[in-house]
Image (cartoon, rainbow, N blue to C red; front, top):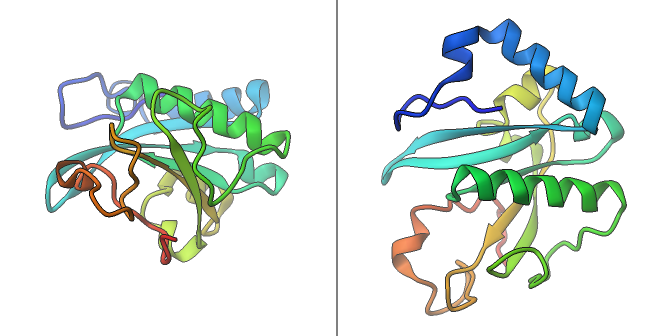
Length: 165
């Protein structure tokens, strides 16, 4: 499910309305255990793509959020993270090289920090939800907190965690 406004892609909410969009989210949660939202946010650097899960909080798990990746990669990463969360195998605070083309690291995000990003998940839950941010490395395998991280990639991936080490 996708809600886009700024890059010419089809906007499901614009075309079908919010009620239909939410009905599809509920259908996906019932069928798969979670749904996802792929959208974009305006930052000082311009539009940044982002995606997040919806519905994991129904089973007392945090939602997952990721920034700066193409929609197909975002969806793939969110689905893999959700599967690992559900089977209790998602590793936090350690680089993982078995997730995709580039190493990733997951960081816990307090509910108040993720509030402005998990809009549909928070509205659905009627509260601010805790989340986990999937942070991807640059092509050299460096993370935003590493010396030498590609500065051009920094604007694509806002880091929400209050501590990055």
